[in-house]
Image (cartoon, rainbow over all chains, first blue to last red; front, side):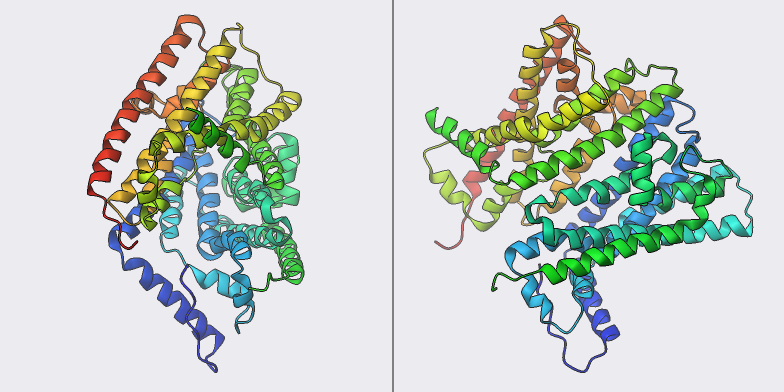
Length: 276
Length: 264
């Protein structure tokens, strides 16, 4: 990891963040081959995640009550959301190694909140590749669906990826906060962070009931795409997931951020340096 | 031989240090297992109870065996060798009186065995109790399955070893490790059985060594293929292994000849 350049005293926080992000972006494009290779990987990861839905719907006509185009729309909404959240908060994945290497102490004495420093510590442009995959699949799915574009569906189409990104972003922060307690057990957080990403991309109706409840009312993954998707598509929901819940996706995001900030604060407060 | 056995034992012990990490791994693999089971069950129900030879019970077996083999196979990024090439430590390795590839192979095998007994068996048991799994139709599935798993783990090692060798020619190979995962994950059957792929994708997958890592060991172990068919699958895995060992050793020899390490 590149050390953050000292920011002179008196500079506004917004400018500080701007300078940091600008330097990250420039450093990544310096090595062209390496950069494009990582973009390619990022696009590839988006595509292989789609393979499951593609393969299943070449075998059967409907999956969890959704046609291929409908399931693709749900996948694309969730995938774009996760890619956006990953773009901003993905760096929180490095908290365990920062803790182990004793790098966190240095960051805590700097005049920027830790969360802001982590977010800007490695702004990965390549992650845009993944968001692009989601967007392309979304556009293709929408052209296949001939939806009736009412103000309501338009509103949902615009707000869903943003609310979804907020929910996944909260999961990144929640995972980061829990790392202070888990240390070696960091893989626990993958269960709800990457498990949530996986569950969120699927039609919620296919999930076994306990899984469905867990990934809606505890970890609100189905609120990132499936629930608002039901409203966009004008479909009824399965047991435990009525379609009208889709209107409350922003509330699910508030809940997720509540959990996230609680865990993050508790984590920072618990942190005792190793004298680095 | 004794040396390699001890390297294997060291690999086994190395991973037994972090107990909480094991519990975390078991938990996470189980959660993913439940989601994957959900997906296949939904598809099989729509298909009328059977899909490409999988009924619900066999699909569950496929998922939980897959979750069990995930950690031993270590498909996710491994760059220890590449790191040693990058920082020059590889020169010390080459000077040692052991074969570089065999030494890493032994250590990786020890690691895989440990992972199988802990992170592997636990999700399998959890899945068997909660969802249920099908047992193979003949006892021959067990010994053949064990051989198939050993071959799968070995193939995974040799392939990762090969990707790491790229570090002799390029400074930053993270891009290659990422790309490798993008190819190996779907074609090994990690997301969904390769047998369910549409024909064009199936043809591509079967032409690569990747189904030999995960899909084929699961097929043999679960008794999806039995008797001479199972022997054929195992023979094919062995064929890929021989080919890839020869290829990576040739690469290694070429790389060692051109290696220049700076400093002392």
